[in-house]
Length: 129
Image (spheres, rainbow, N blue to C red):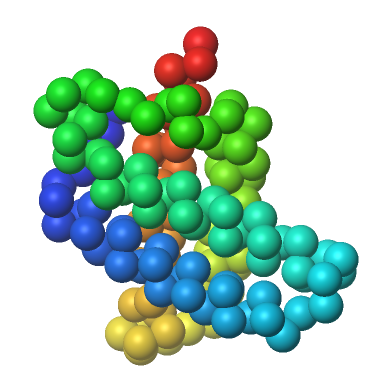
């Protein structure tokens, strides 16, 4: 299992919080029941779970505590799917950005953050086995 530094966790939290904020704003503009709205809602749920897991990670490593009772297995599995889907979209557009641009830097940060979030969610899922 990967162990993440406080700096990596904080950077991941910031990147995901930024993505969450953008999704919450976009959700207001989408018609309920559409595919895009459903995807945004799933992403918002996943990003909230990811942020909470990132915040809890340092104390989880120290005390081996978990808050598994807060999330059901299905919710964690849906979160991994949503984050994997978001990561795939970012990886697909990454080659379009020139290295060194703000768009490229943002995409790289999001990819790293999504990786960390996925790993932490997988750890929570292991508690169900």
